[in-house]
Structures are given as structure tokens and as C-alpha cells.
Amino acid sequence: MTTISPDYQVIVVGTGFSGLGMGIALKKAGINAFAILEKANDVGGTWRDNHYPGCACDVQSHLYSFSFEPNPNWTRMYAPQPEIKKYLQHCARKYALTSHIQFGQEVKKAIYDEKNKLWRLETAAGKTITARMVVSGMGGLSTPAYPNVKGIENFQGEKFHSQDWQHDYPLEGKRVAVIGTGASAIQFVPQIVPRVAHLDLYQRTPPWIMPKPDRAITSAERTLFKYAPKTQEAIRNAIYLQLESRVLGFVINPRVMKIAELQARRYLRKSIPDPVLRKKVTPDYSFGCKRVLISNDYLPSLAQANVDVVTNGIKEVRAHSIIADDGQEREVDAIIFGTGFKAQDPIPRGAVFGKGGVDLIDTWQQGAQAYLGSAVNGFPNFFMLMGPNTGLGHSSMVYMIESQIAYVMDCLKQMQKNKWKAVDVKADSQQSFNTDLQDKLGGSIWSSGCKSWYVNADGKNTTLWPGFTFDFRRKTANFDAKNYQVEH
Ligand code: N01
Image (cartoon, rainbow, N blue to C red; front, side, top):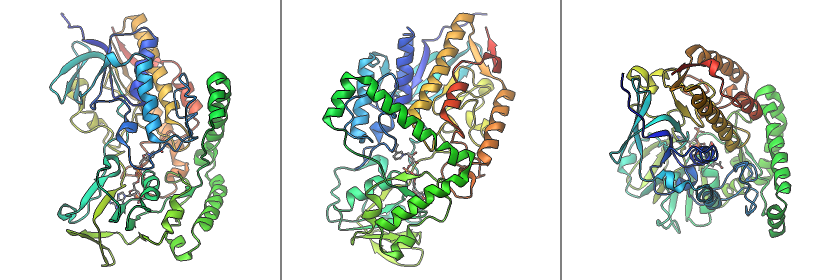
């Protein structure tokens, strides 16, 4: 039987932390037969796409960066988006990835060719590329979600999503409606309040907010990090341990969260003296059930005279106004959607086809799932970085990404050594991994009764890792071939 050889050993999709991290690992291992496909014309993933005012990381940058590439130049404990984007551009340059990246190549379809044991990728630009292995670094939060509101198409003013910020639109003096009060909105709302004439903030569920322990990093500290990198490493390790201790409250004993909730309530009382407004923005669900947000300026901004927090829901949008459920009509010039992303559909239908031409989505009828958040039975040599149940509510995703990259690299090493052409995770290994995972999630704070993007319509948590990140690292340290069917 004649078989064809693929164009590349590996195709990586995306150039965020995942895609670039994977490319760097391949280079370091001496593997050069790879390409990175990127839909845009620059690297950076979510840190390129999100550029709304106030966009910043809510995990300390000493930890929210590659372990092998510390950045002594962070200017704040929580770096603003332009610095993170610059850091990723620096990584692409430093590790000579640019020649591997094909920009403007949005992957539309990936089809597994069983006969030749390779993947055939089709891009929106009309290119077809083949590879033995595909590593998806597409991220879980990239497709904006818009609210299904009656009459929105009739609105005559400006409207945009937080990920598609229209910087050319002058907000100054405008009546603006913001829909949503999640991680993105709490960052841009305080930035725009001083600029707009009036802001109506449509809040469906108030988030729990904690103060952000942010501060500028002094130039003396930056010099120290540059010339004595061990000092920055020590800070990184201390942050890691501190964040990891939060697993106790999220998963092991959710009652611990009551202590944090008391702190959040105290912070609310301090930030919002008006009891009526305070009541409106006080959550009625357990602290930690939805993502806990950190901000020093969000709550105070709600107390400004030009801000109304509207909790009645939206009944209808008209050409120049929004009508709330209580019938009150408010005129607006612009609507900004801070309504998040389609986290439950990380990969669209019709995009990834495995053995027997099966659509990946058809294997996910009870919600997305994978083995170690990475591999899916029936989809040989296809690995996802930041796949199902690898998200975190407590620490840095970059740590999880590096764990998964090490796993894929060990797989490649073993494939080369043993001359395997394909590895396909066994269905029972995938099943027992997920049964155990869902058992753990059942007792977590995320299952305490709120609605969040962590869980799907059936109440199944398909997004979060229920435990310590070092446990995930231990599980992904070596490619466990015994859980895979291998083909020569
Ligand atoms: O989105 P969200 P986001 N009518 O889903 C509301 C990451 N991130 O873009 O809570 C009215 O959190 C919705 O209400 P409810 C981070 O992982 C990281 O803010 O569903 N409201 C909610 O208030 C984060 O979790 C950073 O009731 C509607 C909001 O819109 C994730 O991205 C920074 C509605 C959506 O909040 C998403 O954050 C920013 C409707 N029909 C983001 N539909 C870092 O710093 C939705 N809402 C790393």
C-alpha cells in the first residue's frame, strides 16, 4: 500500500501563549518540520485581539509568562495588555518562530486521513496543508457572544463587542449602554465613566469583586530582575504557591470561601456607601461560584453620578434607546457588549473530522471532553492546548499550557523513537478520566448553584480543572502510551 508523506511533522494552530509555546518547544527539541498557522497578521492570540481600554491580566505577570522566558521589564504586577502583546512578539522573534508562522491562514477544516495517517488542513485563504500531527492552540475564549435581544438589529447608534473595541468612536459626551459585568466589563467600565456623558450598566448577575493587589514595579526592581533573575524567580514561586492555596476553597472545602466572601462584603461596603446601589451589586450566590474578579476602580466607578446600574434586564432595543423589563426607556448613542465568549463551543461544528469522518462536535453531545484536556478518542495525533477542563479559576493558564506542551513533546519523542505513525487515546481511558474529573467537580464551589460560562446548559462543567495545577503537571509529565492505541 502506498502512502503519502505529510508536508509537515506538526502543524500548530494559533500564535497566543499556546501556539508560540508549542513552537518554541519544537525548536528547542530540534524539530523544524513544523508550521504555525495564524488567522491574523500578527502574533498574540487573545492579547492581540483584546485591546479595550483598561485591558490587563488578572494574574500577576511574574507568573503569567513562560517559565523559561522571564520578563524583567514588566511595569506593573498585573501587566496591561500592550505589554503582554509585546512580550509575545518578543518570544516569537527571540525563538526564531517568524519563519514558521504563516499569517492570514485561518484554519477552516481539519480532516484526518486514516489511510495515510495524517491531517489535511484547509484554510480560509484556500490553502491545503498536511501534517502528521495537529496541535490546536486556538484558545477557548475567542468567539464573542452577543446577547439575543429583541430589536438589536434596529439600533441606529454605534455598537461593538469588548473584543472588537472601536477606538475611533469618540465616547466623549455620549450616552452609552454597557451590557454585562464580567471580567472584561469591570476593566473597561472605570476607564470610560469619566469620558461619557452617561453610562447605563445592564447587569444580569453581579460579580464578586476583591481589591486588586496591583502596583507599579519600580525601575530598581526591574534592574534587580535583569541582573539577578533568581529574585524574580523567587517572587514567581511565591505567587504560584499563594494562588495554588486557593484550590482549598474552590475544590477541597468550599466552606473556606466564606472567609473570602466576608472580605469581599467589607470591600463592597467601603467602596459603595449608598445602601440601595450596594444591594443591587451584591451577589446572592456563593463567592467563587462564578469567576472572582479583582479591581480597585470598578465598584467606585459605579458610585459616580453619571452611572446607572440597571438590573431589570432588557426587553427591547429601539433605534436610539433601550427599554428595560420594567418598561423604562433609556436613550443611548452607543451599546458596548461586555457579554463574553462562546466558551462552551471552543471548536465549531464542521471544523474537525476524525476517523470515519466523524465531526468532533458529534462526540461532544454531553459537552466538550477530552483526555487530560488534550486528546479525544477517534482523533489520532490531534492535541488541544487549553482543551476541555484545563481552565483555571485560581492561577495562571500559562502554567497549564506548559504542562500540556511537555506532554505533546514527549508524545512526539516516543512516536519518533518507536516509529509510531499514529496515537489515538483509548475510549475507556478518556471515559474514566472524565468520570473522575466530574466527580471532583461535583463537590466544588462551581457546582454550588450559580449560572456561569464554566458549565453548559445541562449543568456540566466542561471548562475547569478541579484541582492543583501541580497535579495536572504530574499527570502530563510523560506521555502515557498505555492509554493510547498506537499504529505503526
Ligand atoms: O465575559 P463573561 P468576559 N444579557 O462571560 C453578561 C477571561 N478574561 O469577556 O453573569 C445580559 O465573564 C453576563 O451575565 P451573567 C476570563 O476568563 C480574562 O467579561 O451570565 N447580560 C456577564 O456579566 C473571563 O472569565 C481577563 O448573568 C448578559 C457578562 O455578560 C472570560 O475572559 C480579562 C447577557 C459576560 O461576562 C470572559 O470574560 C478579561 C445577556 N443576554 C477576560 N449575556 C484577564 O485578565 C451575557 N451577559 C486574564
